[in-house]
Image 1 (spheres, rainbow, N blue to C red):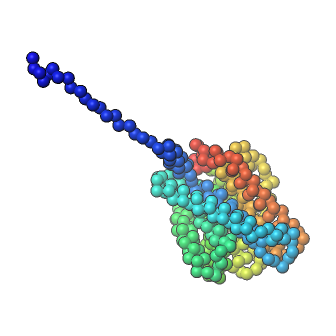
Image 2 (image 1 turned 30 degrees about the horizontal axis):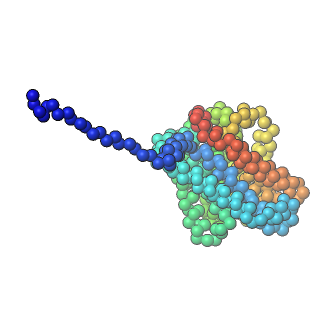
Image 3 (image 1 turned 45 degrees about the vertical axis):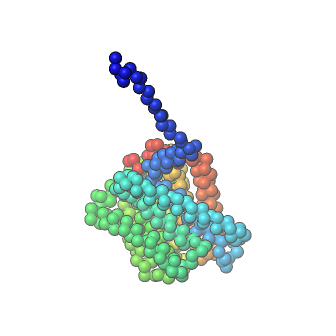
Length: 369
């Protein structure tokens, strides 16, 4: 008998165990949550920053010294300056956070961003972050229009608007009426608003020629768009029910145009007044038809933030109008619109805080038309 074969072989097996730290599970959960948010995030979420940045501009203008001693202005002047700085800081934090998340979305979900760029609704909201930055720049308590920082930032925020103009307006021009009739919807007015906000920012720093250039570009295409939407109202057919709050953009564009022309001309003249009256009429036409928005208000959606920005810019136009006219009726309109704007914005903040679980729904219908 072979001695070697009779010897038993003993194998020592060392089991490798992975020691996981308590934090690894939470880091994995955070990573998965971030990936999920990036997949659901779209440019329509910049409605929130549009609202907050325009509110900051409204608070700044109402808080500034004026010749008249209207009660609403006195209330805002009585508020501590830190209140406005906190609001502006909140707007900055929100806009910076959304911008960072959207940049990450471009890196990790480029195909989704491309699809959004080619969508007849989604592409218009690509103007929203640049409009928000321009509004934030105009309301800044730290940067004045006469500084070089203001000029550099204006170029940084305006160039993307012009690039998007070439894309959208170029399609309207080359593909003709049939393409515009099919693609036009209320969100298309964001392209116009982008030019008008840029024009006002340029006028504030004394660049009149650049301001007039952007104003004329925006207004020329606004006339075409307004007639197309007024005759056909394609937004009622091509937009999902949840997006009906964007109908408020109908009076946002003339309101911003009124503000822009006021800054360009140096006074709230007849042109600014006509644009303000047009926006006021469109506002009354919409609020007198609450059934149009009834279905969209049944369940919370980020589209609700579309109410705030148009109301705020209309309130801004009413402030300039009241300062020019100095009449009891004008100040009454300013009081109502400004109070309504602040109330709607605060309400939306509360609703959003109470419905954070619905901010990123699994099946967002906003761009699925």
